[in-house]
Length: 109
Figure (cartoon, helix red, strand yellow):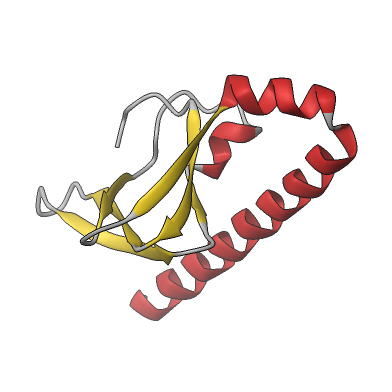
């Protein structure tokens, strides 16, 4: 959390836990657990986000692929149609995670 948001992580196997620091108890709480076939840090691929919003930690053994913003930008220039499809998928993931966060917040209050 707070590190530069300049790459995304594609999860090949295992699970990645996303944690958010709190102001209330000076601790972290789990905001998500993502498994094989998922992506974390996806905002780095298209948004001008300066810092990570959460920490990501492997839950045991995990195999990941790192996709930097710079490499994604270069690949997008060479494969614009595929880049549009990937960006649409990333947007779908972001919207789904936002809806899930709203449901969690509503359950708390």
